[in-house]
Length: 259
Image (cartoon, rainbow, N blue to C red; front, side):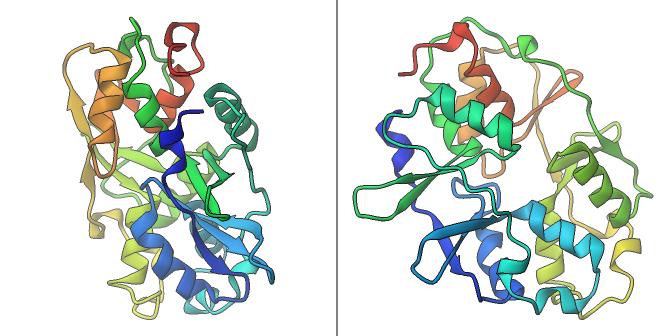
């Protein structure tokens, strides 16, 4: 495993902290190198993870202010994937395929933990020698929405299809769990300022733009471009490309020179 992957310290929160506190701490890290929070137990040991998925799941089930008043332990995922210094890029990504979450802890030199995420793996992708072009990345269905969609429909689409971003039809604009959670915490003051959150139209949310790629570039070049983006997401012809697609490409025999 390249030493550069050890450089991002985990962001943690105690199990008894309330969910509003967790959301406020989480927002700056969504889609960053850290991406999720580690929930720690009484002895500061990792016991769970809270990311965008956990927040939107709970808001879908209880779209009211009260959902943010419980303890973070009640909403966390109990699946915490850890890797060691002897783990490989390949084995780490394969673990992520099994858990459905591109996030692992790794012990660091100061006695704590660092985190590895799909975003961090872009650093591996960009230094890989390959002849694979982005047109050769596996095609996946593009999940889209219309300007008349509600947040209820958006969140259900995300959770059903295990995706964090969906695209406005016939455009390169997208909405993500991060955008929804930022809106909840800021404009809506943790849902104090609305009584019908799930029925809100998506038109009231600030969409963002995926980068449009016009040339069939190499996968390592795509990884390099995405590593410089604040919220990496790209559109090429009839496909969307996320950091997870670069992770899957790293499993190919044509991208094996990263160790």
